[in-house]
Amino acid sequence: MKIDTSTFKTPPLRTANTPQKTPENTARASEAVSISQTAAPLMSGEKPPVNAGKIQEIKDAIAQGRFQINPEAIADGLIETARDLVNSQRKA
Image (tube, rainbow, N blue to C red; front, side, top):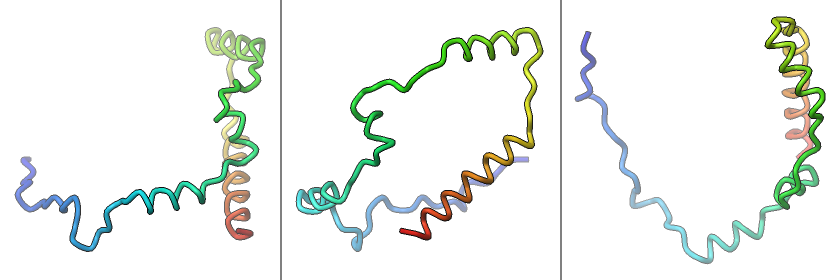
């Protein structure tokens, strides 16, 4: 089956109503940026703490076929993260 691409249209990159970036617009946008306390160490080049022993333990378990994945724990963590995100956006 061949897909007919003649019906697909590429939107224009810039329309007449799209404002162009000016130094004034750029400066205002950069003034509104703030770095959270969590992100600050990442931006400064600090490396996060790494537990090399735990990493090696997981690598060994994977290599030996002993590594067990707990889908319930993963799902619970994803739901909790989503809940936290929604709650933090409601507060803002």
